[in-house]
Image (cartoon, rainbow, N blue to C red; front, side, top):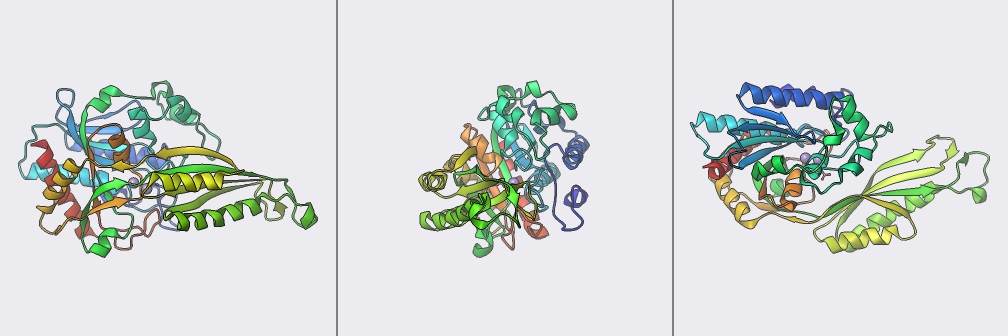
Length: 390
Ligand code: GLV
Ligand code: MN
Ligand code: MN
């Protein structure tokens, strides 16, 4: 299945993926999901927020156990962040059928829309809308780099923007959610383990900083006459790094937009996005407050700490450890955001399995997982689903 997806949205120059939500690549990935679901005789549907659900069994009669992830990517992302969870969900379902397992609880495969927030800036858009933590009016007004709003994009894709928002009926189908994901750091490599279980997701957020100045000629304007916002931006980048070290957290300006973006002009405006995360909310908030002093800042998203339910976490670690080849199953916290965290925050018992990433690199074409580790992940996920659906 990963091979089937390998060409979709791939930049041949870099090997990285460009799978923005609702792009042509995303539409192709959605088609693929429908095809895989139908081929397995699953009942597939798209909810009012664009999330896809494929059911084995009827969740309107009894809430189900759901597994899955997302198919969109960051710009120039890797092949595994998202797709590994969706592919493993279908593969685990196949394995359960091969084993002759008959779930007494409905089993669902989910694909959440726009997990990365690459296009409209807010991550986990699909699960935030589903659970009601994001106001649909705010979501619809978000714009992409071309200035097109989410409402316009949805309409062009034949969707009904007016339908967006909290969806208690769909949410009630989700009795619990287990997301398998490629690990995005070096936790499992360093512990020499192919599969792990999540304990928590760090609190994290994104903030837009606007630095205003006066656009002017780069050659003729005297240094003392310049109002150059690039200088304030550069100082803020260094300040973020210094503050992150001091607070024991991480912080990055990973996206910047310069206007007018001429090599031979002092810019008039620099907009830059800060991503800050850490084990404790207070430290993250303190860093942002320091950087925001005297600056033009807007919070674009915030996700509080997620501590996965210990009982479910332990049950999952135990089921995963029954898998040949998985060895000991470490329990790790992560700095990466996931739809599982949004669902957990909305009261859905949720958990995550991680698959080792040999380099620890993610959000880059260098992201990787070995085939044997992916297979160990699928076996662990199948055991977990068997345990939860019996
Ligand atoms: C999602 O991958 C995120 O944590 O940014
Ligand atoms: Mn990601
Ligand atoms: Mn992901």
